[in-house]
Image 1 (cartoon, rainbow, N blue to C red):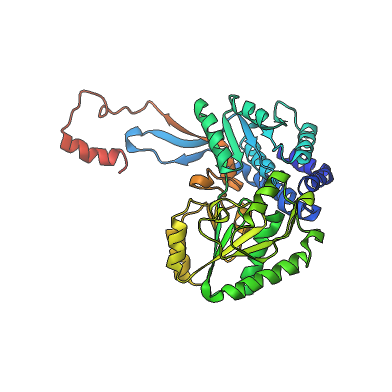
Image 2: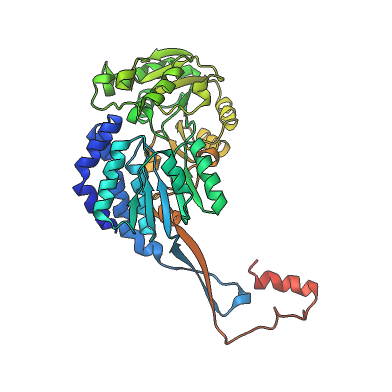
Length: 433
């Protein structure tokens, strides 16, 4: 099944790349690296390891149950619903599909209606390689999505906003359907004074403005040590010019905003603070230039709401404890980025500030490792996937104990034949304490 998907991605590659370009204005090269190659790698990795993942795992048996064999078996849920977003419309629906298929499930895919060209391309791909009773695609708007959530699926996997995630979870709760929610939040970035500022800025600009900032793990705002603020801001500006030129609108590597509604929402954030760099926008082209904001108030919407666009607020701190205190007061984000070479600072931040994932001295790369789990915590989601974690996400862990009849201790049967004191001592041994 996974080899068929790989063959389909190869055969339909051009169609998929063109569809994403129509929806997001993203270059074929970026889409291939960020989406198609990602899915291909995930599928190849699963095919290589699925035999070991699916093998029943022997576990110890308590003495009271001897003689017996205990094991944990991985079993598919059955038919699963995978609901994808519009920002990475290929990767974020096909990567969960890889995990679902690897675990032995059938799947229904619901792509986002906000990326209609890609939704149609996914439907063409899937219908050409899989019978509909194995994998099917359902297209449509929110009414269709709501109808899907009323069906008796055995598992729901949703990627999208926190607001929509709550709605999905509420629908699933009525039917006691297990869910995995990959949401978002305001992923913070801390920049300390001890790092090479030019390199740190370059890595932050890459992670922030990839796909015009429409990435769930993009750095949402930066807290920079006040001592290097000016140097950092100038380095950000130089990196933006280096990556996208003096006029990013002409850059083949710079994407567009998904639709007019999101464009208007993002333009509203530009009223916050002061624009240090960028701030240009054009509704007819759904364009907003890479923008850096400074002197933003903590109560401004741009620091309260997930931005999900090419606007980067930069604030300062004097002591790392100040940054830690600020982040501890906020909802748990999907990702956190920390730039420092000081081990004590790294340990303090990792110990005190929670997040779905962390990348130290870079951005985004932690989600590319197939041996690392990817997922949120709290308002940024629940559950994890990628690699083996994806296989387990779509598998039921079934406990199996197989006993023989050669020995049947009377110890557990009534009437009780020993004192409470002796029972306590024996219980510790028999139950494995």
